[in-house]
Amino acid sequence: GGSLSWSLALSGIFALLGAVNALRLPCATPPATGRVGHLPTAEAGRALSRRPVLVFCIAIFLASMASAAFGAFFPLYLTDEAGVAPQWIAPITNVGVFLEVFFMLSFGWFLKRLGFKKLVMAGMLCMALRLALLAIFPSAATAVVTQAVHGMVVLAVMVAPVIYLNQQADSHYRHSIQGLYTVAVIGTSRMAGSFAAGYVAKASLLSVFAYASVLMTLAAAVLLFAFHDELAAQAAD
Image (cartoon, rainbow, N blue to C red; front, side, top):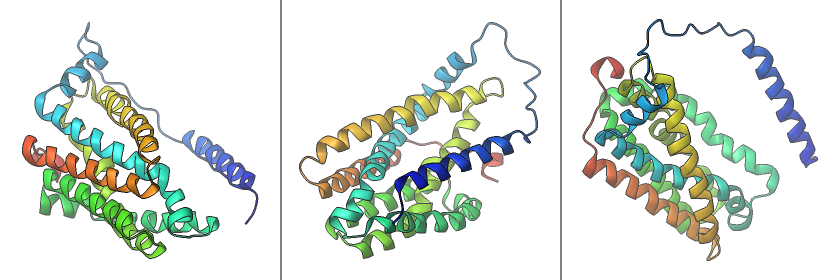
């Protein structure tokens, strides 16, 4: 019920506290060896272009487009379709963030039980189901209940890919592959996903969630039929 400027001021304060705390981080030691004449970014690009990694990136690109559509229009969904008062948007969203903690703590367990590919697919299918339910049954109850799978989606789309990409890179360009992946796959897909979702929203707000559900299902299908890679044993432990 307060002014929106309060949120902006608090965000600035928290960012400042984070910056001050970052001063306490230990200094990173650069790698002692590296191949002279080889640009880390170029090597990272070659690693990302290998067939299994490229297929994986395509799947994550589609999933990230769907996530961008969800993130952009979920607050509007809560107010315009579910009839939620604006002050309840953040608390409802944070239900999923709270549950995410327990999924993070169980990440190793999920990885050992399902394997890398099945874990990522499970998270994508959970998100596809969540989006479909939001489109078919628009209500505050649906919005709250479907927050239960948010943590699984985070594991699949945000956590597991980092581990997989680390496995694909040598220490000489491990940071570069993560940066290139973030720009070329995550950043680009979020921009494309936001623009595309805006055009879909012209038809109706609910159609955005149906469209995003199809995208997420397609991402899982790409993994199912075209991706046949797993984490190395030491990475899965």
